[in-house]
Image (cartoon, rainbow, N blue to C red; front, side):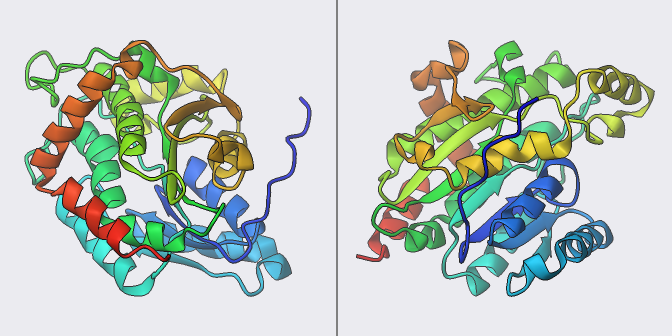
Length: 310
């Protein structure tokens, strides 16, 4: 396999990465830091996240001098935790150049969060929506002429297997863990397209991507069935670094500025599924999600643009 072209510099940029303590997220943090960025890792387990940060800094050694890798702890499946971490980030980051929405999981059995949301839906979709909307102001503030901020969301080719029901987003009837995971990855594409329609691309561009089938701990939280599934996936898996490549590349490549709202695979724009291109249903999902999260998304967009640096 040919070596990927080198990344453009991220020197002086601030990047926030969710799901950062393992797998794709950890590999992305290393690549961001190696490219010159200061990185904020968001992870669910403090010991694991701190250990990941320290191992990356130790590995990079002198190459990481003058760059910061810090972390915040949050269970992003819980809306209050998303708001709490957003508040902490807003208090210390006046500018965010890249938000990498990467946290995600699949739960084969139906679980409900303390908020009353099905867990896959809460983590894989609601957290992307809430965190992005809450951090719009520092994202817009980071933009400069010819250099908009970027929101990059990890979706999956699994979105092609989705069977969305807008009247039953949380699959209270006929739940299937794989179906809900595929649906959530479709919602990532719909969210990206709807967000792109609302943002000035000179200020913020947004994209979704398929990272490949990556050798991580994904699915192993589901007992024996999850371990069997993980074993099958590992037959065709790529490394976490390979899985993180398009995510990190979209965070700095000029090609990502040509237009906003696209879906990418291996650094290439790819048409998502026909269902993913149904912008009417994407708009319905946007409205329902805003209602479920209690966010006034339009006001957050207006406020972010009102505080934009001229």
